[in-house]
Image (cartoon, rainbow, N blue to C red):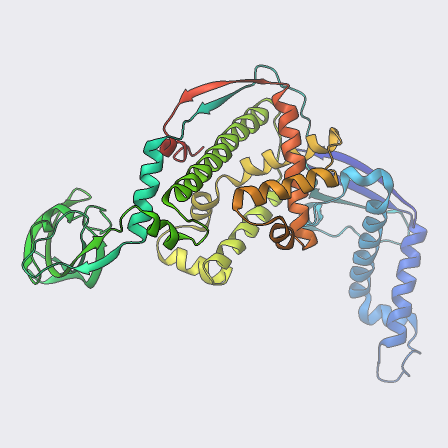
Amino acid sequence: MKVTKEVAKLDNSAVKLTATIAKEDVVSGYNKCIAKYAKNVQIPGFRKGKVPAKILEQKYGDSLKQEVLADIIDESLNQIFAEEDSKEIRPLPYAQPRLEDDKLPEFSMEKDLTFTVIYDVFPTVEVKNFAKIEVKEPQVTVGDKELEEELKALQERNAMVIDKKDGDPVEKDNVVTVDYKELNADDSVANERNGFVFTVGSGENIYKFDDEIIGMKKDETKTFTKKIDDAEKKISVTVKSIKVRNLPALDDDLAQDVNEKFKTLDDLKNDIKKNLEIAKNRKVEEIKQQSLIEQLIEKNPVTVPQSMIKAEMEHRWAMMAQQFQTTPEQLEKMITASGQTKETMLTQWTGDAEKMLKGRLIIDTLIREKNITATPEEVEAEFKKIADDSGMTLEEVKDHYKDPRAKEYIVDEVKENKLYADLYSQVKVSKGDKIEFADLFKNVR
């Protein structure tokens, strides 16, 4: 097929492609369509395969022309996109070309056929500006305080919960079971829940009545008023049970209960310190990378087409539905019923999709431009690092990543780490503020 093309770049990583097909190819396409109809169509008075072309044109003229146009357009686009010099104008997989004004061109066998389509293409990414980029590395120390907090949490996870003696009052950190009611002005019940269990002082109840029930005893009922969302609420609470956590002693026995690999409490402490350091280093590196990428995005703008953002959002939504063990459609119904929107929930759970896509495009572009690769030795070293950090054997790690797609994830990780090391050498990396270990993980960008 003889096809000529003209390409005009539009905003938001879109292009307008105008293609012209020689009239002889239009005639050829029409004749092929007529032949196909003549072979398959049955019309009373004619044997199958013997229907004259004029009869077909009279009966199916408009349909024939529409089908010929669609076939010729598809064939010409496939031919254009297969050409070596058309790589930069190939449509995204999820952005099908659409006819300008959504109308098929006029069909004629007396002249060349010209049509125009508009579609999204892969965005152009140029990363050239590294001027005045400064990455600040948070200064975080893992010390006795962090170790003690982890040990306390470990004690609580391994605690035995036992009933308090009859007559003993509710105290902070007790585990209580309550029945509660929200009352109307006439003391009728507006809302109630029975058998609600929570830890006093955690605030994990919608009316936040932790302080009000301290001192109450089993089977005691108390009514009080709480200010909730600038409105006075009358609440009635009945304590049904009071339990206390019996924390285990910090000793070798606890260490052995946590994991048989620990023989002493010191073994456990050393393992906790190691894991805290690993967590700290990972988070610090994540913050550095986020800072660098955000500055690169700011200095090297990337326009992401809406179709790419939509595809990313749909992928995230499907993954979220999988986590909730439901379908994307059912999850959307649940979210809508709760008064939220799909977009709002996605942003809350997965972050800014457009911003993350821009960062991903910049990273992929730089890896490609710098021709960064991962050698077998580097991949092996990454496997060993994972094994050391996780406490698994090297063989267990390799078995976990034996699937080619899983192993490719490790290969990509090695490439990215090499890229960041190279980028840090091109920008200023300085010491940031001193922050507490716990605050490090509150650093949501």
